[in-house]
Length: 262
Image (cartoon, rainbow, N blue to C red):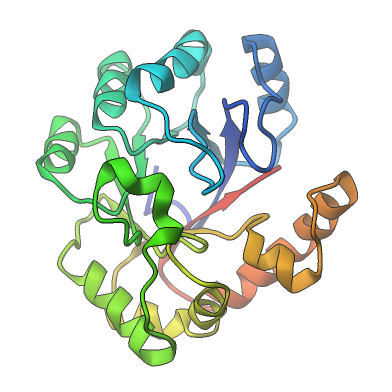
């Protein structure tokens, strides 16, 4: 499906969690999930997550995460588009990869850990339909992924962008998307430094495939003076989201997956 057919994909966030900051607890059955999927005519495909990595939430283990995914697998197998799974647990993506071994569309491992390992190589080698998202997260190990705000870089401005480009440069691969991971192990100032210098980062790395997720992020809410995620606040954030994204990727030739709440 990508990257040849188009240059920008809308990836709808589906949280199968009780505690995600935006919509935790909204989906507890396949019928609720199906209703959510049908409400999203502007979305190209979906990113399913079963653990919230917001810093205020406790991490869960792979068995707890799997128990949240499992009730929805039969429904997901009927979908006619790629599936993205947001997990940093190797055991979870291995189980999902097995469950969807006969699936006709790409499977994307959206791994926010920032930890490339032999398991990533194995995942990509299992199928030419597999894609991987390599994310900029400075947490020192997979098990500390959810504690990412404890591990901030001291750099700002051009030095911060250079640090991030160095992070990505050794991991180029045709089936890998790079995610600068707005909001992960970054201060408020660093998020906006990244926003302002994003074109420079793209030029430094010279990679064709990128994922961007700024939808309803706390640094964006703070910029707009929105303290709580009320229904009106969500509408305000969603209205400005596309404008901010267009400012990030205007006139670029790379392929972008835009991760978006809806």
